[in-house]
Image 1 (cartoon, rainbow, N blue to C red):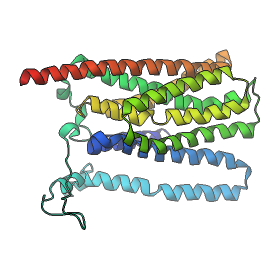
Image 2 (image 1 turned 90 degrees about the vertical axis):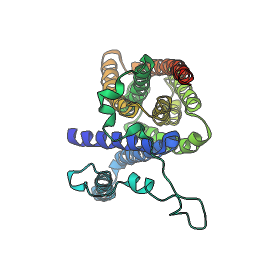
Image 3 (image 1 turned 135 degrees about the vertical axis):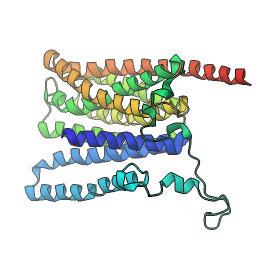
Image 4 (image 1 turned 60 degrees about the vertical axis):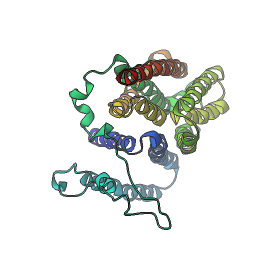
Length: 340
């Protein structure tokens, strides 16, 4: 499991880094797509748990179906790594971006169109591991590092909320005062991941229409309101289902939006993608441990209280990020004016 988790973390980081490198201003839309597909896989796994009452032969067929549909994933990753010259045996193969950028402006065109096909590659993320170079961090302003820290802290909390809610909502539902049935409580996890999947599907369109700060404001405020309402109606099983669905919809777009917004502030010249993906994974791991220990010592009601407190902290960090962003951009504007 540890090796599988490590491999998934590497693939996730490299995929996000390459999407930001390729699409930059439009990366939020494509980040929503990748996260939606990941949540869809988690949702399929959660649905499998609900099928535990069906015969074992059907579960075996379900497992084989998932296995053979996931086999192309490592093959595709190896093919992309080969094209990007990340494997020792692939130094002679042309890189995908080089092939596109080397096209003649008067050469390949769309069928029925005179507009040339061209790809502009920004030097911001020169390679997958280029942000690890200490020379890139010299002569950076303090706001440069603060933005990395704040973006990472927001995702540390929000992904931690996702992990802890998915991990302990079943425990909360079967404990007093709800005392929900085990089969019904098992549906909550599936509903939560299904809501996240639908939310990220809708966020593809919303990311095209609205800016990342607006989406983040609505999402984080929605998370706080839902958590507060869950605290108020903590004895209602019906509202727990409703709140789980709305919470998944609200929190679904936070990760891609924060990642795209932070990279845009830093003009795609920092290490934001690596830092943010690492922070999100760390939060998903540590907050589950923290919430689990609190539930064990203080009771099931503390599960909702921990989520509410974390939501308020995340929103405050986002407001601070907006403030630091204005300072950072005003500093860069002043430098450009001095050069002129």
